[in-house]
Image (tube, rainbow, N blue to C red; front, side):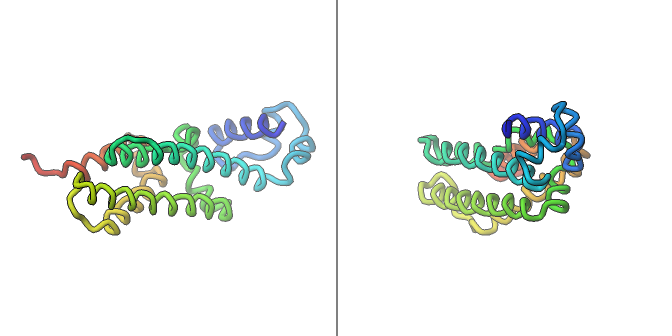
Amino acid sequence: MKNIIINAAMEEVNLRGLRFTMQDLATRLKVSKRSLYENFSSKENLIDEMVDIILADMAKEEQEIYAGDAPVISKLEKLLTLHPYAAEMFNKNIYEDLRRLFPKQWEKVEASRAERQKHLQLLLEQGIQDGVLRPVNVNLVGQILKDAFDSFTSYSFLESNGLTYKKAMQELLDILFKGMLLK
């Protein structure tokens, strides 16, 4: 039953963002609110489990990329365009609402992003050592990427420019890897 509730909650988030109510969810599932609370002690507990599932799925995908034998550049591209499977569909305010309404769960997201940041910087260093990337200040590139993550999860920039997260990251990577100068 927990998985059914979580899947229905994901649909509610797609429809209403994180402002859905447990009554909205009960109505969707055609069950009583009591049935929901038998499985989740609170809406925050439900959101917590949803965040855990999404982050676990992303961590699994990231590990597969790291463990693969693809070239460093390919790994960087895959990692930087990786996005939670459900998040691209989510209401555009999901990240702002999560940050504001569910700070404990947002801390988990931030911790996951910080871990990803460390791995990305290690990959950049590996690319430099392998001679695939020219020597650059890896910390600066890391900060640029972190700032891009922050900008791209606010969605106001993306929406106003007709971009998805993945497309914006692909364009950023194109600029980082190829530069802006015509040669």
